[in-house]
Image 1: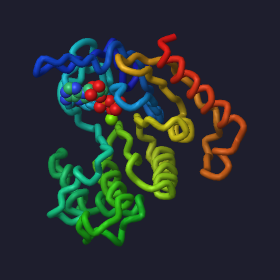
Image 2: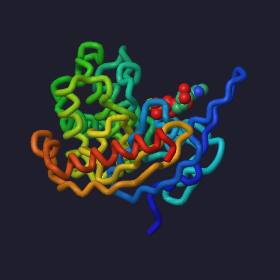
Image 3: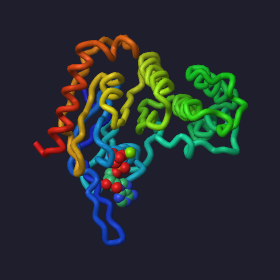
Length: 260
Ligand code: ADP
Ligand code: MG
């Protein structure tokens, strides 16, 4: 079977004003249809760079990204991205429902009624049915991030990319949003690539974790997360296997820093 997503030999060098930064050196991995994969690595190791290359928003310096066997050279249809900075990703002059509907207008012909239906379903599934008529700035940070997630969901993406989406919300909200991601993944059968610098989050969420080294970045290790599919914040995080896995990932990141 051909992987859904294949990243091979990906390199990205930023050049300009006499500076040269090799953000990503040589990344190779694949993702199968329907997988939930977490990519974890230290800040500055090139996670956002990688995600932008996968989303077709940046052109790699070397290597390539294949989606269903086709080379990604611009934003592929059927892919949605949730960025870290939800505050900047929503339009303040549009109501929540209009923000969520916007990308649907770009999508292949959908009737107005169908668009409305998708928007309502998406807001419902992130628990924001009541906030449809509000403006983003009337909502808390966690709610705004849920709007961004709803916008991605309404689009019905085959592939959902998430770039540290919960880094800026409080701990309780973050726990709720993590559970939301796992629930949506299980209900909708999407393929999700979730990027984080948080080891615990990666192990809690992922079915598989890719550990990135510090910059210039390579994949240090790939780890299958053999925790039960049914996870919850109270029990999963205190399970002995969870502790083993997080310790292992932590050691791998330390080893990557030392360059071994
Ligand atoms: P992460 O998301 O893991 O924190 P980034 O992909 O944002 O890492 O950045 C990786 C490296 O590339 C960092 O050293 C960063 O300073 C550099 N970088 C990111 N974007 C640019 C850019 N547009 N121009 C120059 N350097 C950049
Ligand atoms: Mg980043």
